[in-house]
Length: 451
Image (tube, rainbow, N blue to C red; front, top):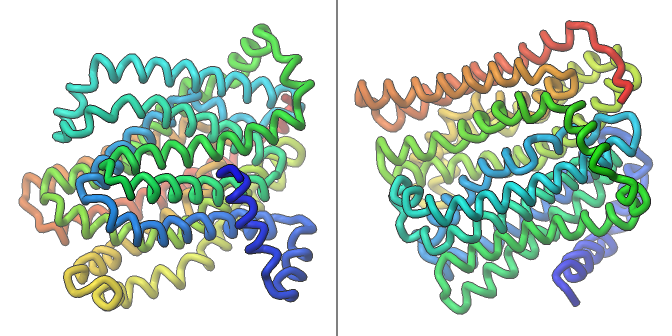
């Protein structure tokens, strides 16, 4: 039984062994609707994150902290490379009115991901030593050849994921998330038994990415063989020109956004060292995982639903936006405020007294976490209404504000606690500004999409 079959078998068993009332509820939910789609995606993500958490308990005994450090650096680089993999054409896939246009975007995006992976492979040969010295991680040099593989697998998965969103194939997305985590954990644990160092973690990460791409790829190909065979060079040129705003504007905006997500950890390391980074990272992980279970699911479902509304009945888009905004506030406020109240105590009880300060960081970042939880799914609105320029303005402003925070921390010799607090408050205001920008964009005339 292959990796894909094993993960599907486990997921099917989990569903079939549920009590009758659970299966009855699932049957009612499967009849369609926004909430059902969110629950499907959140359920798949919950299972995937559960595997990741359980695997971490074992991986911590098989790998050294330095190994995880290399994995973190690798993950940060991959995150930034994936923004450039398909030049952001993939996020336009749900938008064309006809399936032929969407299929052309899929092919164009996959071809670009392949070309960019080759470019990265060549670049790491000539620039790898400089990169690892700049990161102060020379031990990472022998593993840089894995970067193009991870970029290719992750890039193709991104493309196919947006196709699945267009088709509302949310069950398929949920299955691939489970399969990715299962495959990654199995390989990382298996190779860890041989004490191969960070290569076990890195190969596991690549297997997880490519496993998801393989599952979705087989589904897409089987259902759309004829459409793929009709793709031509002329149709690819036409679709690339039609959606040229995505590589011209959205690529830069997305890269700035991802860089903004990676910079806090890097800058904290420069200012205060690895201990503060570890406390900060654990706090972010504990509060981030449960919120992402819902937030990522809402983002994908909202994007699919809102894209359809923008094509067919654009006057319904503002009500959908505001309804989703209220839902996200209601869902996120209670757990985040609870963590803000009991964070230090909870971290001391669960992780030990040495992690008390991580709970304090959670308190300081609670408003930022709520703002991010609400704003991130809704930010897709700017792509849907073709206002990537506003997204770019926001990303630049957010990045400049972040850099200013850490510059002041360095010049004024702030403590770690003050630095994290100011950073959290600044990012909260940034996410409020993003929500207001989306509302502003929706107040402008929205024309139905004809392509």
